[in-house]
Structures are given as structure tokens and as C-alpha cells.
Length: 341
Ligand code: SP5
Ligand code: ZN
Image (tube, rainbow, N blue to C red; front, side, top):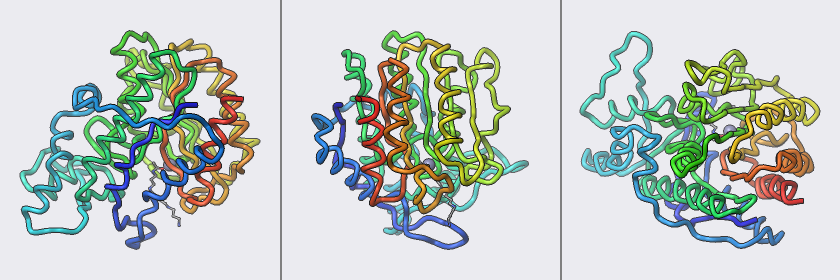
């Protein structure tokens, strides 16, 4: 399988996130993508290619213009305040607060985010732009006829909605790739989100649409981040009703429980008969993941890939989460090897 990868992700390396009440070194760090790339090369998964440059147009098909420009200019504005350390947001427009865009950088950051898991550094804009290009280059290769392509995106994207970032995610790489497929003539695209966390951003972007089916298997939001979306009764709205399916699972779920949800999601995807499938590939379902509570083991990822491959669809894999850095390469690449087998 062809892998699309850019070294630009190294330019994004936040220092801290807020976890368990403490400023903690970021779990979302450059070594994650390095380990996945190293594994792809070690097992000779296939050619590794650099992304092409797509510019802002495909991003603006999904994301709000004010949001995009905030992200583009944020570091410059921050530095103009005399600050040379990482940006983090700390106030959000909660219920009964004004949904207004303040003038100052701290206010704007709160408006355009939903948590403190999105540090912005000097290189964040370049890294998140390249991550989108990695997804779009994979999409272009799929359009040329490839059966499966791996977009080794970093930073990840599935928590980012049209006008807010959060959960280590800035631009929604998978959603931008899905929209590009539709813009190039596809009628229907299915997204299967296997990351441990609910893909709230992707769900939100396509919630009122029937041309993208969104399915997600994740830790039940009653106990797990992102807490405020991802419940089983979220089925879509308007013409999108019936095109959104969530499978929230209990803490401690292993392959036996997880694979039942995968089988159900695959039945829905098959019935939808999409032109292509996008897999939001997070491997934070792993039993030793430091921030997660599922119990998948490394061989389970081979089986995951086999089940996805049995759908017989052209498939773009877009890297999302996974924080057990030692095993992230084995687990992610196992999915792709299972798919190819
Ligand atoms: C892309 C992705 O996987 N984003 C995940 C963002 C999760 N952020 C909140 C993490 C909360 C972890 N709480 C458990 C701490 C264990 N001591
Ligand atoms: Zn995750």
C-alpha cells in the first residue's frame, strides 16, 4: 500500500496539555508519526511519497473562513503580544455567554476551540496545512484507482469541526478528503472512525447531509472524552437523518465487544454502497494506550484490517490518534497489512 507522508509534522510539537488537573507533556508528539513511518518501511508496506500542495480551497470547502484565518495568523498575533511560548486557550463561550468573536487573541482562541488540547506553536500552521495535503494527496491517488492508500497525517483531525479545534486536532483531514471526493464526482462517501474517541468534528460537519455516512466506534461519552457528543441516539438531522451511527462502548471493551460493533458498522456501510470509504485510523483502542480504556491487542488490528478490506471498497486510511508510542507503528500498520491480505 502507498503511504503519503511529510516531515513537516515535526514543526508542530506542543509542550503541555491539561490532563487530570495537571499540565502534562503532550501525548500527541512527533515520535508517534515517526514510529508509524518506521514500521511501514520495516515491513516494506510499499512506496512512501511526499504530499502535493493543494492550497486553501479544499480546506475552505469544510472549514469556516474566519477559523482558517485565525489559525493562519494566530502565532504572529501571539508574538506581537510579546509571547514566545506555546499558545493555549482557557475560556470558552459556554451556555448563555455571547457567541461573539472578540478582538484579542485569547478571546478568539476560546471562540475557535472547545478544549485546551490544542497548543499552537511557531510551526503549527505549516504542520496542519501539510497534514491536510497528506490526506488530499492520498485522496487523489485513490481517485486514480488505488484500492487502498495510507495518509500518515499528523496532527490528527477528527475532533475538529468547521469552526473549532480541539483534542489535538486543527483541520479535519478526513472530512476535507471526503468533501474532495464528492467535489470530484463521487455521490456517496462513507467514513468509519475507529479511533478510541468519538469523532465529534467529523460527525458535526456531515450531520445534516446524506452524501456522507458517518459511523464511529468509541468510548462511551458518558465516561470518556469528548463527553458532549457521540451518543447512540445521534442519528443525523434533516436529510442527514439515518446517515450517522455511533457505537459507544464500555470501558474495558476488548476485541470480542469491539468487533461486534465493527460488524454492525460494516453492514451499514455496505448497505449505503458508497463510492469510497475513509477510515479515521486511530489506534488508541490499544490495551496499553496511556489515555484510553479499551483492550485491543496488536493481532486484533490485523483482523480489523481484514474486516474492513472485506467490504471491497476503495479505502483511504487517515491517521488519527494512538499514544502508546512503542506499539503505535505495529498496530497501525497491522490494520493496513490486514486490509492488503
Ligand atoms: C485524536 C485524539 O485521539 N484525540 C484525543 C484527545 C483526548 N484528550 C483528552 C484526554 C483525556 C485523558 N483522560 C485520561 C487520563 C488518564 N490518566
Ligand atoms: Zn483518539
